[in-house]
Length: 259
Image (cartoon, rainbow, N blue to C red; front, side):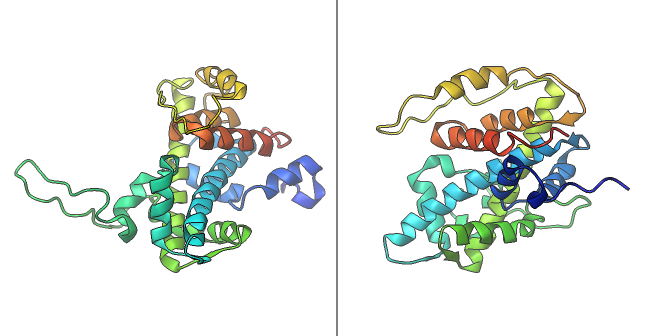
């Protein structure tokens, strides 16, 4: 029987801090990775992925909270999510969820086949392997914890959308991290960098880090922290959100075990 990990309260302060930064537990993160790859996922990689997901969801919730606050409302509704994404294109993540959510229906466009006939919406069917959409409910507890941390609540439809976005985003992050391992580094990444009015140029951290992520060292069968950071640069195409996600992930994993 494998040795049980040290509990947060018994660890060093740095590790305890890392375990406090994300409501998405490593066991959940590793379960998502297992859905897309058979590679071993290191402890630091799981914490990095949890931290990045937390940063993204926190930013989305904050944007929705601001939209709701403009009409003196604390309970978030799906319309606040749309407003948040409209105001900040960086928040448009987990796009595969949009096809499954009534909130985004009509916003993603109507598809036509070669004969000009409307293609019906994707049918939900049972599959041998859980998809990001089927497994979205796993994120409900973490989403509600993030909502509470920002002093808001959300209607069930909004919680469902946040669940779905978190699940799809983390699944895509896991898939890209595995791709980084297989290909030996980042072989493809967006070159678009958003610059908002009054926003400073890219930080020295990003300028130094991104080239370093283009190649990797280490076990070709293990997803490590740096692989998750590299995947983050693929999933988040630029701007403040990517910078913040990378910075927070590095802080969260600074004192965690490599294995």
